[in-house]
Image 1 (tube, rainbow, N blue to C red):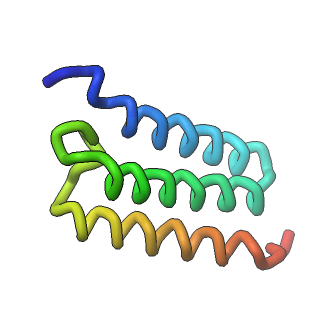
Image 2 (image 1 turned 120 degrees about the horizontal axis):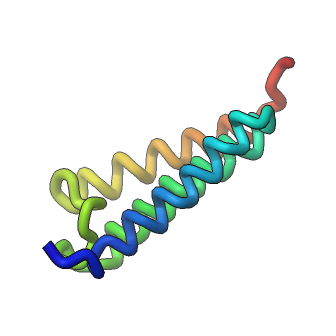
Length: 86
């Protein structure tokens, strides 16, 4: 396995880590927003790049990966629009 092809996964993972850190620090709404953006980024990269170049972002077929990450990202973005109690 060529490590150079893991940059899409590393990018999505790094953004997700920032989102989880924000959530852990108490900024739930911004953390959920950034986590949703991370999933949409992963979906876009999975759609745009050929399968041998996406590395660990390729879990199932391209269509399944794109739709799954895209829908989860969209749900996270919608959830981030609502003010959260607490």
